[in-house]
Length: 368
Ligand SMILES: O=C(O)C(=O)C[C@]1(C(=O)O)C=C[C@@H](O)C=C1
Image (cartoon, rainbow, N blue to C red; front, side, top):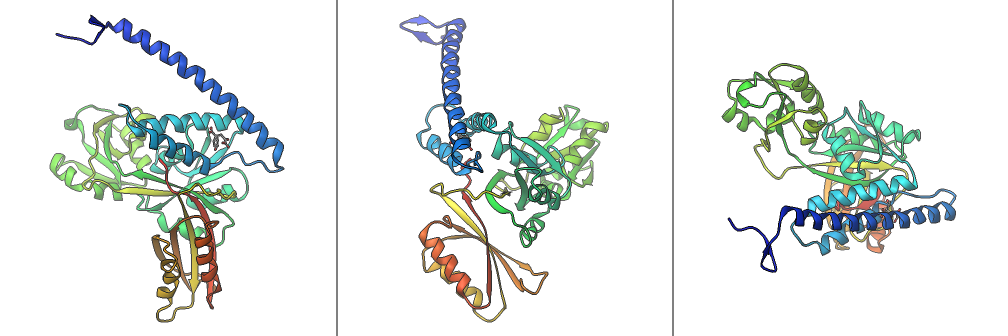
């Protein structure tokens, strides 16, 4: 068997590990040098403003994009993003301890999304409802909130949009998470599974796989992914459909990965807060618009963006609950509200007779 060689001599495991030790020393020194610079950034921020802004999502997005653009080598870019996410999270924690409320319970996809956005150095608090997530931020008990907004397993999308109608909070970030369903259990064989728990949507997303692999096993709906995972942890012979994160946090075995019938689906979450992010160079703006219906009006609204070459990434209509918001549309467009073209379109929209416009926020497009 031929192994690795250097200058014609075989390299031993000990040689390779010596090389890794030397690199680890180097990485460690560089991490400390970076941390010293971040400490100084914290001091500059603290000295320069009465209300210092420590969390800078636009800067974080730029760091991730810059690293992705120069990326090469064997480690996958997703792994590199995760490492940088943790470096930045720990760095920010040296400047200021910040807090996040998310739609719980623990180990839901929303929890996973919050960790993807903020890393593990933030203090995170699970909330029972989307309303509670907003409320915690509104009363100032936490700095940020994370709630699902699109295609979520927790089925609460419209609550998040509706909650913006009367809230002073803004959108300051978006998080995308690939939908990945796994079968988790305390046991380690499919043949031991006597009952499968899952959220209604998760059971539906995986029904072909379940029909093919476990056709005779009872399926039981759970209130949330996390509730299903708890059943798998506590009930003999139970398995749950849940994310990887639930497997880690509840010490369950991954009996099968990627059991979803349709690949490539993503859940989208919003970060809500009070401090507007600055332009990052690749941003989105979310707005809420209401108007009294008359023929061709929506066409006119959309035309204001089209005329200026602004791409709309999403438009969602909601039945309004009050007279002011007769017909309610949630629109996401590309660009930051400080970009002249976007600013002009938003102004033209606000100037249309009978229109009420609320800018929900501009924020970096997902960077990881
Ligand atoms: O550049 C800043 O403003 C920093 O505080 C530094 C840093 C980083 O670690 O690079 C940390 C937190 C911010 O959210 C963005 C970036």
